[in-house]
Length: 223
Image (cartoon, rainbow, N blue to C red; front, side, top):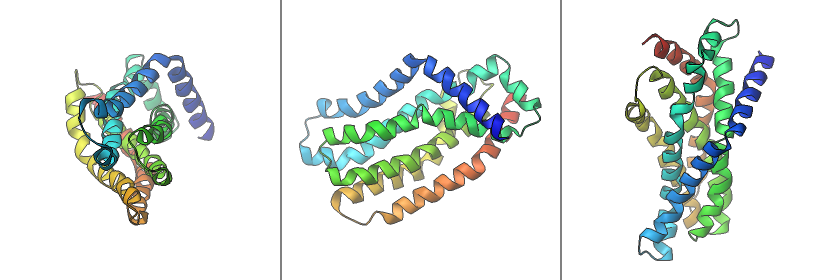
Protein backbone atom coordinates (compact mmCIF):
# COMPACT_ATOMS: atom_id res chain seq x y z
CA UNK A 1 0.00 0.00 0.00
CA UNK A 2 2.88 2.34 0.79
CA UNK A 3 4.37 1.86 -2.67
CA UNK A 4 1.02 2.58 -4.32
CA UNK A 5 0.55 5.68 -2.18
CA UNK A 6 4.03 6.93 -3.07
CA UNK A 7 3.59 6.16 -6.78
CA UNK A 8 0.29 8.03 -7.04
CA UNK A 9 1.64 10.94 -4.99
CA UNK A 10 4.74 11.23 -7.16
CA UNK A 11 2.73 10.99 -10.36
CA UNK A 12 0.24 13.70 -9.33
CA UNK A 13 3.00 16.01 -8.12
CA UNK A 14 4.87 15.56 -11.41
CA UNK A 15 1.75 16.33 -13.43
CA UNK A 16 0.96 19.38 -11.29
CA UNK A 17 4.50 20.77 -11.57
CA UNK A 18 4.36 20.40 -15.34
CA UNK A 19 1.26 22.59 -15.34
CA UNK A 20 2.96 25.58 -13.76
CA UNK A 21 0.57 27.99 -15.45
CA UNK A 22 -2.35 26.56 -13.50
CA UNK A 23 -0.46 26.77 -10.21
CA UNK A 24 0.53 30.37 -10.89
CA UNK A 25 -3.04 31.20 -11.86
CA UNK A 26 -4.42 29.93 -8.53
CA UNK A 27 -1.67 31.70 -6.59
CA UNK A 28 -2.23 34.99 -8.40
CA UNK A 29 -5.97 34.73 -7.83
CA UNK A 30 -5.37 34.35 -4.09
CA UNK A 31 -2.92 37.27 -4.05
CA UNK A 32 -5.25 39.51 -6.03
CA UNK A 33 -8.25 38.78 -3.80
CA UNK A 34 -6.27 39.91 -0.76
CA UNK A 35 -4.14 42.66 -2.29
CA UNK A 36 -6.89 44.43 -4.22
CA UNK A 37 -9.13 44.89 -1.18
CA UNK A 38 -7.08 47.77 0.31
CA UNK A 39 -6.83 49.37 -3.13
CA UNK A 40 -10.56 49.15 -3.77
CA UNK A 41 -11.68 50.49 -0.41
CA UNK A 42 -10.84 53.70 1.38
CA UNK A 43 -10.04 52.19 4.77
CA UNK A 44 -7.37 52.97 7.33
CA UNK A 45 -4.84 50.57 8.80
CA UNK A 46 -6.93 49.69 11.83
CA UNK A 47 -9.80 48.46 9.69
CA UNK A 48 -7.46 46.46 7.44
CA UNK A 49 -5.96 44.68 10.43
CA UNK A 50 -9.43 43.90 11.75
CA UNK A 51 -10.65 42.38 8.47
CA UNK A 52 -7.36 40.64 7.59
CA UNK A 53 -8.32 37.21 9.05
CA UNK A 54 -11.63 37.08 7.19
CA UNK A 55 -9.99 38.38 4.02
CA UNK A 56 -7.25 35.75 4.06
CA UNK A 57 -9.69 32.89 4.62
CA UNK A 58 -12.09 34.13 1.95
CA UNK A 59 -9.16 34.29 -0.46
CA UNK A 60 -8.23 30.71 0.42
CA UNK A 61 -11.84 29.58 0.06
CA UNK A 62 -12.31 31.15 -3.37
CA UNK A 63 -8.98 29.80 -4.62
CA UNK A 64 -9.84 26.28 -3.45
CA UNK A 65 -13.25 26.43 -5.12
CA UNK A 66 -11.54 27.55 -8.33
CA UNK A 67 -9.34 24.46 -8.46
CA UNK A 68 -11.62 21.70 -7.13
CA UNK A 69 -13.22 20.88 -10.48
CA UNK A 70 -9.87 19.67 -11.81
CA UNK A 71 -9.07 17.36 -8.90
CA UNK A 72 -10.39 14.15 -10.50
CA UNK A 73 -11.37 15.47 -13.93
CA UNK A 74 -8.26 14.46 -15.87
CA UNK A 75 -8.15 10.96 -14.37
CA UNK A 76 -11.83 10.53 -15.19
CA UNK A 77 -11.41 11.63 -18.80
CA UNK A 78 -8.41 9.37 -19.44
CA UNK A 79 -9.87 6.33 -17.68
CA UNK A 80 -7.45 6.29 -14.75
CA UNK A 81 -10.27 6.35 -12.20
CA UNK A 82 -11.70 3.18 -13.68
CA UNK A 83 -8.29 1.53 -13.27
CA UNK A 84 -8.16 2.73 -9.68
CA UNK A 85 -11.61 1.27 -9.00
CA UNK A 86 -10.67 -2.21 -10.20
CA UNK A 87 -7.20 -2.21 -8.62
CA UNK A 88 -6.39 -4.54 -5.75
CA UNK A 89 -5.29 -1.66 -3.52
CA UNK A 90 -7.92 0.18 -1.46
CA UNK A 91 -9.27 3.17 -3.35
CA UNK A 92 -9.05 5.24 -0.16
CA UNK A 93 -5.23 4.92 -0.17
CA UNK A 94 -5.06 6.16 -3.75
CA UNK A 95 -7.47 8.99 -2.98
CA UNK A 96 -5.43 10.04 0.06
CA UNK A 97 -2.32 10.31 -2.13
CA UNK A 98 -4.18 12.39 -4.72
CA UNK A 99 -5.59 14.80 -2.14
CA UNK A 100 -2.18 15.14 -0.48
CA UNK A 101 -0.64 16.03 -3.84
CA UNK A 102 -3.44 18.52 -4.40
CA UNK A 103 -2.83 20.11 -1.00
CA UNK A 104 0.94 20.30 -1.52
CA UNK A 105 0.40 22.20 -4.78
CA UNK A 106 -2.38 24.48 -3.49
CA UNK A 107 -2.98 24.58 0.26
CA UNK A 108 0.71 24.60 1.16
CA UNK A 109 1.16 27.62 -1.12
CA UNK A 110 -1.47 29.51 0.87
CA UNK A 111 0.32 28.64 4.12
CA UNK A 112 3.53 30.14 2.72
CA UNK A 113 2.13 33.23 0.99
CA UNK A 114 -0.57 34.08 3.53
CA UNK A 115 1.82 35.55 6.14
CA UNK A 116 3.42 37.81 3.54
CA UNK A 117 0.03 39.16 2.51
CA UNK A 118 -1.17 39.87 6.05
CA UNK A 119 2.02 41.81 6.74
CA UNK A 120 0.99 44.05 3.85
CA UNK A 121 -2.31 44.60 5.68
CA UNK A 122 -0.54 45.68 8.86
CA UNK A 123 -0.99 42.54 10.95
CA UNK A 124 1.64 42.39 13.73
CA UNK A 125 4.47 39.91 13.28
CA UNK A 126 3.63 38.28 16.62
CA UNK A 127 0.38 36.94 15.13
CA UNK A 128 2.08 35.17 12.22
CA UNK A 129 2.84 31.83 13.98
CA UNK A 130 -0.84 31.43 14.91
CA UNK A 131 -1.89 32.32 11.39
CA UNK A 132 0.51 29.77 9.89
CA UNK A 133 -0.73 27.10 12.31
CA UNK A 134 -4.38 27.89 11.50
CA UNK A 135 -3.77 27.69 7.75
CA UNK A 136 -1.71 24.52 8.10
CA UNK A 137 -4.53 22.85 10.04
CA UNK A 138 -7.46 24.31 8.13
CA UNK A 139 -6.44 23.99 4.49
CA UNK A 140 -6.18 20.16 4.58
CA UNK A 141 -9.76 20.08 5.87
CA UNK A 142 -10.85 22.31 2.99
CA UNK A 143 -9.07 20.00 0.54
CA UNK A 144 -10.63 16.83 1.96
CA UNK A 145 -14.16 18.24 2.09
CA UNK A 146 -13.78 19.71 -1.38
CA UNK A 147 -12.61 16.35 -2.71
CA UNK A 148 -15.81 14.74 -1.43
CA UNK A 149 -17.92 17.26 -3.33
CA UNK A 150 -15.74 16.97 -6.43
CA UNK A 151 -16.13 13.18 -6.40
CA UNK A 152 -19.91 13.37 -6.02
CA UNK A 153 -20.31 15.79 -8.95
CA UNK A 154 -17.68 14.17 -11.15
CA UNK A 155 -19.98 12.99 -13.93
CA UNK A 156 -22.28 16.02 -13.92
CA UNK A 157 -21.86 18.64 -16.64
CA UNK A 158 -21.00 22.15 -15.44
CA UNK A 159 -21.10 21.09 -11.80
CA UNK A 160 -19.20 24.09 -10.45
CA UNK A 161 -22.19 25.82 -8.88
CA UNK A 162 -23.59 22.59 -7.45
CA UNK A 163 -20.18 21.74 -6.03
CA UNK A 164 -20.01 25.09 -4.26
CA UNK A 165 -23.49 24.66 -2.81
CA UNK A 166 -22.66 21.17 -1.54
CA UNK A 167 -19.44 21.93 0.25
CA UNK A 168 -19.77 25.55 1.38
CA UNK A 169 -21.88 24.75 4.50
CA UNK A 170 -19.22 22.22 5.53
CA UNK A 171 -16.52 24.86 5.15
CA UNK A 172 -18.15 27.26 7.62
CA UNK A 173 -16.65 25.76 10.84
CA UNK A 174 -13.15 25.88 9.37
CA UNK A 175 -13.60 29.49 8.32
CA UNK A 176 -15.02 30.50 11.71
CA UNK A 177 -12.30 28.91 13.83
CA UNK A 178 -9.50 29.72 11.40
CA UNK A 179 -10.38 33.40 11.26
CA UNK A 180 -11.17 33.36 15.00
CA UNK A 181 -7.71 32.06 15.89
CA UNK A 182 -6.05 34.75 13.78
CA UNK A 183 -8.26 37.48 15.19
CA UNK A 184 -7.54 36.37 18.76
CA UNK A 185 -3.79 36.40 18.09
CA UNK A 186 -3.99 39.94 16.71
CA UNK A 187 -5.79 41.34 19.76
CA UNK A 188 -3.86 39.26 22.29
CA UNK A 189 -6.58 36.81 23.35
CA UNK A 190 -6.05 33.05 23.96
CA UNK A 191 -5.87 31.08 20.72
CA UNK A 192 -5.50 27.51 22.00
CA UNK A 193 -9.23 26.68 21.84
CA UNK A 194 -9.64 27.60 18.18
CA UNK A 195 -6.44 25.80 17.19
CA UNK A 196 -7.50 22.68 19.10
CA UNK A 197 -10.79 22.63 17.19
CA UNK A 198 -8.97 23.06 13.87
CA UNK A 199 -6.59 20.26 14.87
CA UNK A 200 -9.52 17.98 15.71
CA UNK A 201 -11.20 18.78 12.39
CA UNK A 202 -7.95 18.10 10.54
CA UNK A 203 -7.44 14.77 12.29
CA UNK A 204 -11.04 13.77 11.60
CA UNK A 205 -10.76 14.74 7.94
CA UNK A 206 -7.46 12.92 7.39
CA UNK A 207 -8.78 9.80 9.11
CA UNK A 208 -12.26 9.51 7.62
CA UNK A 209 -12.41 11.61 4.47
CA UNK A 210 -10.41 9.28 2.15
CA UNK A 211 -12.95 6.51 2.69
CA UNK A 212 -15.85 8.91 2.13
CA UNK A 213 -14.19 10.24 -1.04
CA UNK A 214 -13.70 6.68 -2.31
CA UNK A 215 -17.38 5.93 -1.77
CA UNK A 216 -18.34 9.25 -3.40
CA UNK A 217 -16.23 8.41 -6.45
CA UNK A 218 -18.08 5.15 -6.90
CA UNK A 219 -21.39 7.00 -6.63
CA UNK A 220 -20.20 9.78 -8.93
CA UNK A 221 -19.01 7.39 -11.61
CA UNK A 222 -22.30 5.50 -11.50
CA UNK A 223 -24.45 8.63 -12.08
